[in-house]
Image (tube, rainbow, N blue to C red; front, side):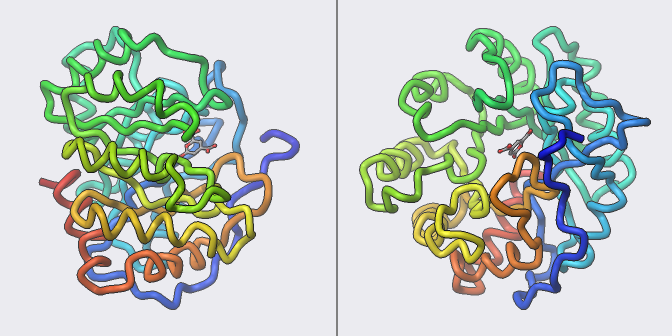
Length: 289
Ligand SMILES: O=C(O)c1cc(C(=O)O)oc(=O)c1
């Protein structure tokens, strides 16, 4: 583990908010264990181990029933830890993989049988080296045949340049972590309004109302992130999903208490209908239908 790497919270608090029956933690990861599933040589960080057993324990403790496990960049295109976790969870988990452009349809079908339903395209420069757009487009063509979708992780300042590429993708697209807005600019700032307009004009684009702990500048009550999450839930009630982002890679300012992250949900989705759509209906439609 990197010297300055913060491990996940050792004893998260029990949330006050009780998720509705069938709730899905729709963005989380498994790391290693390194002696069984080594981290990728080309990784840009070395995390602590965060095995599937700990993820499933947290799922039950927080009151969720299912996970969508997203391949993290520390494992590169080696999805073995993800597949292992999916096979252990059976119908309680689905996955989003990271694949190389030369992957065959047989291997994709095997991943689909294990519960993979999407691939991830990462544009965050501190996490990955750039991938040529045509490489991503060739992967998109293959996974479209399986009915999979594409999760995209980018920073707000890169959005403008990415829009033409995003419009070329033939599948549903799910944007990680609210598109990482600069919360100091406020939810009415043109930057976030442009992101809202992009989703309004592209019905195939979904968004994750996740990671207040990464976006806040005020600190662990995350109040400066509430307006952003609430706006997305109000504008896109049937295209928004939520997740813990456990085990929270690369956190520097603090390590979030996962119970407190769950208590963030009613602040951005105040009504039971919004909570059911965010936590059950939307992720079930995207990953279990
Ligand atoms: O902001 C991050 O550092 C981060 C990294 C990864 C990953 O390494 O895959 O995934 C995330 O959802 C967030």
